[in-house]
Image 1 (cartoon, rainbow, N blue to C red):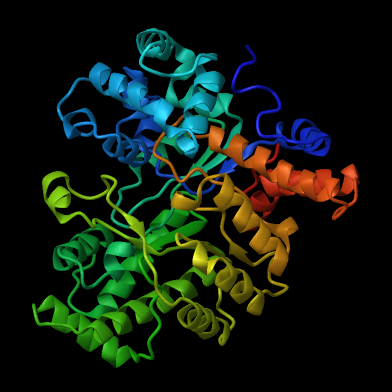
Image 2 (image 1 turned 90 degrees about the vertical axis):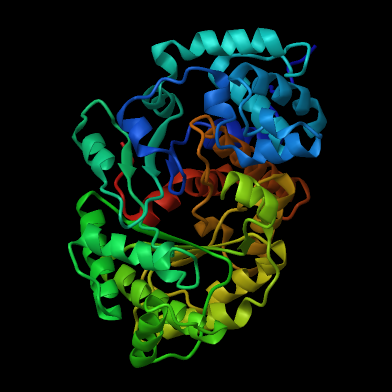
Length: 470
């Protein structure tokens, strides 16, 4: 029987096959947004079991297992790694139609050479085969990165991070991949969150500033940006439920900060004013430094309060939020653009109802500063599947220039997720192949081949200003 993951997997016509095999497949990877551990990269971590690399921290898999009715002890609980793997193996056949089915078998094929379908009957064999291979030097973190042809990685890091592992990586000549930090200051922005006061104290300590006033917060953030820049940072990231935009003065932001730090109540409008002023300040800083600003918008988090109190955040109880985006997105961009301080920006949305809002808004603020200065980011999280990717690419093409798109990222905590770049590339080639088959694009491989190579790697390499080609 033909293997499920074969050479022409997801490629439905001859043009798509030629575009993928001759142009996309060999392009290197720039994974410009992920949640990999820089410590695990620096330490060249070796995983003890397939469960450690696959199931520890993967909320996609956790949600699927819960949906099948599997007890939480086998999901995030005290069960052994082997027991958890057995339950995941039981779940996999039920994920047909979900990208997890494709990702699982792509990873087994690419990293372990396993063509068998994972299920209850094959679970023990695959458990033993993968664990045996994980003890080999070919599957340490650094080896996986090299095997995957990854030229650049941007991790996600809090401003208070010491960046010690990024510094160690930079000094390690055996690591050929650029591993750069990403500045993610959400905890300094979300003034309404529990723990805000204690975080501000921690921020001050990391910047060697005693924070007494809002000005001190801004100075501390600026000082930490300097520290990030010293280890090669070229990008920031913001994971926001909504993008704030309220008319606000510096004096108002000062007063709101003082109220919050003294334990006084702040209203919803005051929260939005503080968030707006801080985001505009940061946007101007990013522009001055030549950094890219990433906006991940629209996740409503920790919705199951019983499980949140039991397990904590980031355990798979987040979903799409619905809100009005157009006014705040245009207002925020216009505020920065009015003083010519709008940085290069990528906007990712969780709710696909915002696709065309974003695709048309970014067209309002493109400029000669950069090719594709404002980007509609790749299908994110719940959109990170075939339909979501096709929809994002189609909406971008309809309202902008797909040819300038910076392409795919893993947004993952797993070192095996680089196959998501392959998945994206196959879908991209199939989309363009279909256009050619329908007579909507010319069968010009010089034109289309370059476009594919640009989207797979070169656009991002140029956009972020990191020299990764060799």
